[in-house]
Length: 110
Image 1 (cartoon, rainbow, N blue to C red):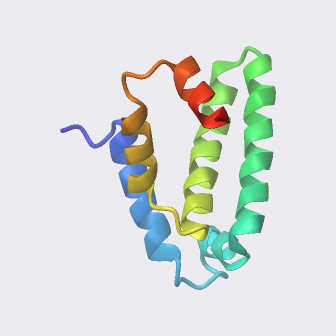
Image 2: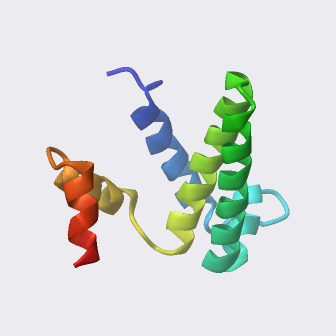
């Protein structure tokens, strides 16, 4: 299997984030974020998401690519800070496979 697939890269990223949980914040940006708690991580994730939205409207694929990478990184950090396992997210996505997005969204409103 090619480890340069999005899944392979995200697996390595999650392992790195997990390893940085106890790292010195002076030597690790991830440790700095995690040390500030889930709320701070979520705010940073939101900022990055807004930057990705702006990039998507500019018509510059390379800018959106860079911002999307930032969004994924900050999402993974936010999940780690909130003690949500990436495998739990994968299970939630897998459970939705084969279901219309409209039907799945409607089921959450009930």
